[in-house]
Image (cartoon, rainbow, N blue to C red; front, side, top):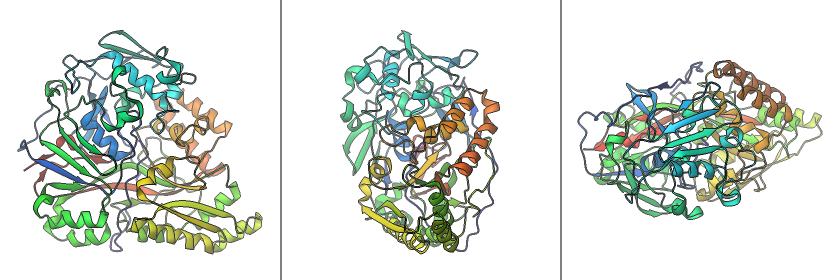
Length: 564
């Protein structure tokens, strides 16, 4: 899913690392899930939920949202064709705007969806199939609306040539609407995972007449239980109830609180201390940044620990290396020198809770994942600067310059940057650690023209398969797209062709093939240093009820929360 960019959390030396997982991340399906959603036991209506965030949103345009927090927020505002709900803690894919989970043909190259009756926008107008079709066309406007998912470029019939409605007009062979309730999506190759893809906000209907392009982010038209009340970009968002949302059309969401107030760009430590103290308005607050070690230590043996909700995450973090600018032998030296243990201590990661070691690109919960260790560090340790310097010397690259950005106004990021610079310098590199405001952190990670050759990044499965990981971030055919969806800029024909080949396989046969390709890419090209896999921690006040972790989205499911 989704490039995640939540801020790093905190560490405790008393915790021991959890064993590496060899599990699968399996999501059940229920095409006949009924609306309205089952009521939450003891839930109350009314009140205000305060969400305190250290992150700064990049956009709320449903076509472009692709970070965990903005995805979670937009699922309260916009609705897609399908969605995930939790049954006894397990994720289940259920219908949303559609009456079922889509009806594919035999080879998954044609998908048909029928919209429910009674669907309206916040202004009372009817949701039509043409609006969903327009949203699909908008996905292909990569020059104007970069940063969102790019699967359509690979799969939609004509997706390789159609440039979106602004440049190519409305005539797109990949989608058809035979009537006001039916959406037909046509593929140029099989896409068995389509019904999972349609759960993303990029499928939220948008009437063509209401598309304000770059301004749409400031007030996307709501179909969900909440709508934008007010928005101060980068600072505050207030969501209020959408009276046109009908719970009888929605098998998952609720509308318990009167409003949700999101405050952005706050200090992580200060926010967590406030929620732990649980005074006044903060009793109705929550924060979703990884719990910092000192704050975890404050609550671990107290009743306040009951207000820390933890869960799995479908995400891995990496240091991507620009393969155009850093030769392979230098990339191997970078990986050999990387100070994982020191940077985790600087970040305050909590092993087993906010961090687990990783040696692969695919998260270990991906079906078909293979356990391998190309770098040879088991995803831990402080690197080997002596060996790395010898590798550089042997390659004639001693003093090779590495450069990366970090958030200068975030103490954690500054500490991590200092650790990295020191370790890499010891290994024989020249290092430029370039400060930038945290408000630009997401732009810096996405902007392909920034003069850095190392790039922090994360990736989260959009659904439980390798086709939601490797094609999204390592298909070189996308390397030149705006927003750098391939953060290593790896563009190797053999890799691109293998991605295409595996994508055409039946889903079950493709599982192990994705794991094998992951290993091949790391062995032959080493585009990244895996930094670890994350967990999800949500800290909330004493008056916040029913905080459920969305393990698919790596965030709280705001639609289930109420205020006491």
